[in-house]
Amino acid sequence: MTPDQLAATSGNASWMLMSAALVLLMTPALALFYGGMSRQKSAINMMMMSFGSLGVVGVVYILWGWSMSYGTESWLGLFSNPFEFFGLENAITDEAGNYIAGAAGYANVIDICFQVTFAAIAVAIISGSLANRVKFKTWLLFTALWVTFAYFPMSHMVWGGGLLSHAEDSFASWMFGTIDEAGETVAAIAPIDFAGGTVVHINAGIAGLILALIIGHSRGFMEEETKPHNLPLVMLGAALLWFGWFGFNGGSAFAADGLAGLAWINTTAAACAAMLGWLLVERVRDHRSTSLGAASGVVAGLVTITPAAGTFTPLTSLIAGLIGGILAAYGVGLKFRFRFDDSLDVVGLHLVAGLWGTIACGLFAKDIGLFTGGGSDGFKLLAVQIVIALFAALWCAVVTLIIGLALKYTMGWRIKGIHEEAGIDSALHRETAYHYENT
Image (cartoon, rainbow, N blue to C red; front, side):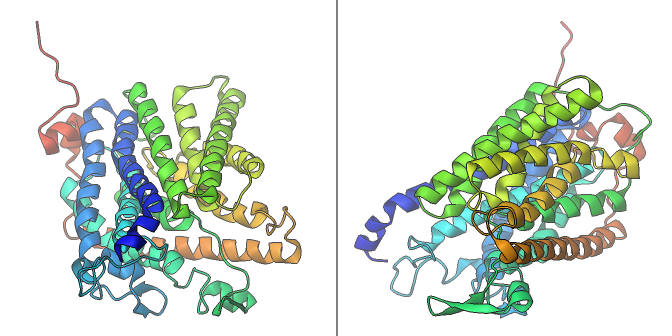
């Protein structure tokens, strides 16, 4: 890129760098959210799982993650050649030393900065299903394997022109044909995933469910009541997640423009409505409203609007958010009904809300949804959204099952029962969240 080109895109570049920083903040924010929700003697471990996943993903993404996700050599629409841009070679500057322009016009390296943060938060979300009971070293190896075989292929399939995109060779094209758009053959009914309903939330939610089933429940699960040990920490984590989510959704406009503003207001609308929806469920069901419910409702709304932030109106965002909060509030109870230890509600918050948000695009997408003027094409869009949601869930379930079982029978997942009882923080990290001295 020439100096003039760089200057012309400086506003958008600034916004995207800020958005990347906001999304990066979400992983430490999740550490606070999960740390507060966990037992006191597990808080450090929960926070370390988020930080550890960030460290691993940051290395792996540079080595082969970007290449697998956004390389030009697609393998069957599932993933790209991991060696094409290995170590980001030829992805940042050309032979003359000039910065390579990305798809949105500014330097490609800025897109790389933005996308690595998505991969990190996706893996960190999964850790909430595994609180109190897994080996830290196994978790770190799982992180590297899961982003390689689950996350990078999914990001390629959805955003890199693969099977779940609008490309000519995609499920959407095979289902309802193609059209010519600006000289390019694309799906006549294009799937919608604005910021990661499938790539991040369905992906991570299914992984959390599969691992919870493989690893088994914590000692005392459904035998003794477990409560968050630090609710102010939970609220702080939720607040920072909300703040970072404006980069997550607003940044997915890839420009400082009206679409980014629409994503911002839709994100706020859905989070607010979902919080109220969750609190309403608590009030009707439990005759009380809790701070944990408020924080969880906010996250459920943020997850719901993620795939739809650029295609809903503020009004439909309110509707979808309210329903998402209600569904997620009931969704967290699935672990008790079916007896799987999803310790910190990954299934309810991310899988249930992620599925709803992805499918809701077929109902409420502006002018093309089933309930917003889409007519027969609205039915087609709904069908496409259901197919991409189910395929994403199936892909991640199979990959996670293989990785999870392989690690179970090699390294092992579980810490010793005596260490779980005494507290995973002191057993694995030789630290505690709170140190009390006798005075």
